[in-house]
Image: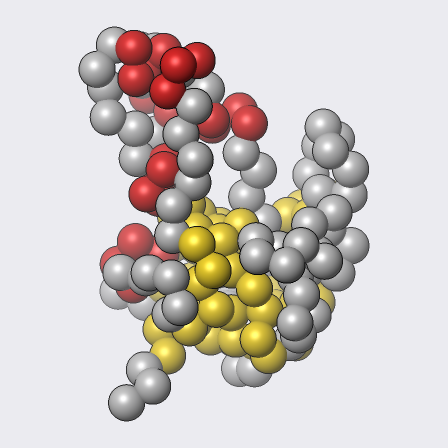
Length: 149
């Protein structure tokens, strides 16, 4: 299965709803143009697997972080790339992202899922990345892991 960029969102202000885009500029050395985290040194771009988007809706208890966490890029098949910190991915023809963190903090003490013993896929299903080679990314772009060998 090929991994595909399913959706793009930017968040201009904390607490404000995201803006869905069909394309966005990934700025080399930074994040997505117009996003409030664009200039963040370590986690300017957030990524999630498309399989997570409906997971919380199917649960009896509410997963706290599904409401707190906002993802910039939703990628179908992201989990199949088996990415970890330092890995590189290409989106489309020219944009290269480096995975800066492969773990999202869990707020266990406030989460109904955790308190009911239900494992949540979010902490390990969310990734953060920084743009190493910029360019325009578009919905439908292929996402591939870059092998340095």
